[in-house]
Length: 466
Ligand code: NAD
Image (cartoon, rainbow, N blue to C red; front, side):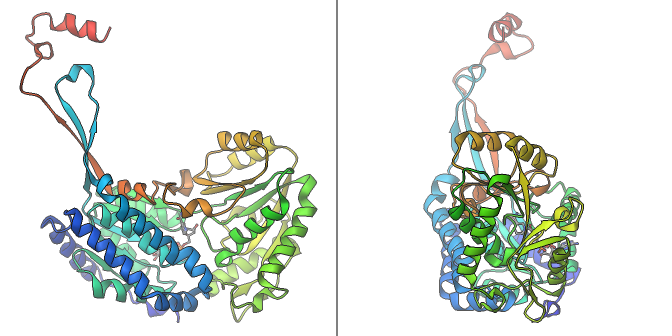
């Protein structure tokens, strides 16, 4: 499959689609809770019934292994839909809130309502999961959705279009396949919410376009996520969990450890453990291992490959041009200025840096953009507190990698350049809901002090706020 197999749409086609959804939403079809649950059930059924097609599409686009597909694509979605269906009734109920003493007699409510017509634009690295996960929250909250999957994973894009467009009403949920042009046509239209997952650069384009109609956005972006291994860490376990976090999908994961910060004392022991575990995962020749993912396309393959020139290779470093695969690699960068230290790597190449004390680490990470993820391996709660309390980042794990994304109880999102807003579990529902604040006032009595002609009004106010 090549990139060109996803055809661009015209501005007119996009416009018609948005108009249909606007009409569908205005007619009130998305509002009843029972209907929303039915939509989620249908999504769940489609995922379950089409597992073989999903596995095949992901194999074609990224050579993902079946295990990876279950762990990082299908499994996550199934869990998220089940969780949402279980809790939706409670989340969707108006919430009664307290009032203040000046408002005695009144009741306050926060009433979640759908925004309306929403747009979801997704990337290629988890082309099924990152396209469908936002839909769960959007549909649960009662919105309509236009989904624009990535053109770089055409098999997954076609599959999503076929599955969804054959089974859902166009006014409710529709997949528009296309690339940059289609995405830009979509961004010219008026939406009530835009949910974008992708690169920082395109995130800025999306936000600029959204500002035209003051459309609220969630931006799920990327960046350089540090992985710190302190001297007291369990090195065997750390190496195993870091290798999994880095090498799943050949490092093409927004929250993959981007670079290592190893305490000087454990550097060589850690490297030995990493080599050992990677060999046990993928064998002596990972490039030949069927379960080891490829880089998505030629352009990204050449980009990641070029990082191999940015320092001294400690481990790995071989590539297969034909299969577009790059070995799990450890590299000591030649300086801070080389591209591998300035750009998001998004591949299986892991730079190794060292530190002497934790303050150095804090200063270093805080000197860059706020990361999407941060991982720390230590047994010391003091070190843990130092890092967690002094560095701002989207989210992360202590003594693990990636796993914080896989629980609906933890909102997932970035901060600063790594994004804005969060989703998963209840926060997916709240992201796609506007909470309308309503005060219901009593008519049984009326405080006169609030009115301009009130006798003693000012005196009462002074007492209240004295
Ligand atoms: P990308 O920004 O190139 O593309 C994402 C989407 O935007 C695609 O659907 C694409 O068609 C569209 N697009 C591309 N250029 C555009 C333009 N000029 N105008 C309008 N739309 C445009 O990102 P990608 O290469 O698909 O994904 C990799 C990036 O996404 C990495 O930076 C990664 O960290 C990030 N990412 C973040 C998360 C997260 O959850 N935070 C998850 C996965 C990936």
